[in-house]
Length: 257
Image 1 (spheres, helix red, strand yellow):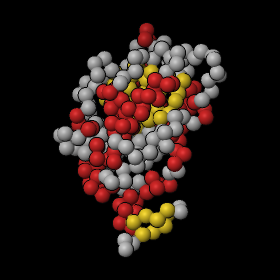
Image 2 (tube, one colour):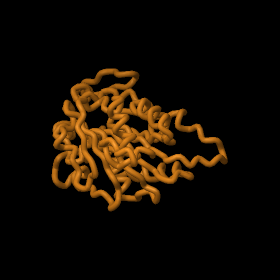
Image 3 (tube, one colour):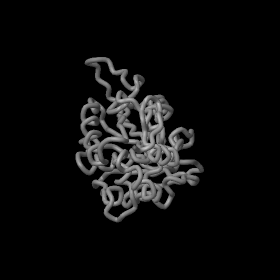
Image 4 (tube, helix red, strand yellow):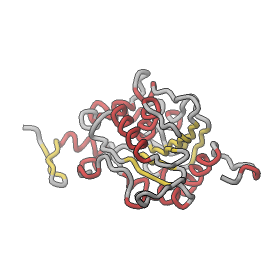
């Protein structure tokens, strides 16, 4: 009989538990079913029935093993800057990047409403899900995309962990550095403006792995992978790109949104 250990009421193979712990992903096992397929915490659900909301919409997509709560600080900043914000929640233990991208496309269509443009901000795996959505069914009013620590060229970390974790986290297989992997082969549709923010001390997705042909801007900040989205300087860069299509400060004549 395979050795197991108990974790929050679930029996988990000891070998799997060790692999998840080493990869920093053991928290996946604590995610309840109710966390799947959520779109946005209560603060993004303020629209009154029947009322028109003509603000630009930003949809946030969290990373592997995380929940919408990991993007909460960024959500607050974007709302304070005048955007309507929604979050796409998913379970990293189910589906592929393609199926998650299709689910994101459906959610984006449901949430667009009267928004003149729909922007996307993703972290890590979430950025590849956004790319998959854009390749399958881009929104009619698609705006700009900001990618935080994106494994656009695959990730050496995914190469190491996919053989052990691929059975319980199917999307990790799509993030490998193999030339035919999903992360390496998804192309950007024409006209989509993408800005990339990488962390200089990121040990999960190296700076060289974040580059993407066709991206409009790329910047490196002094940060780690897991909490890049919580940094105030990153918040500023995100808002700047959503407004102006670049991370550098706009000229005075362009300063107004």
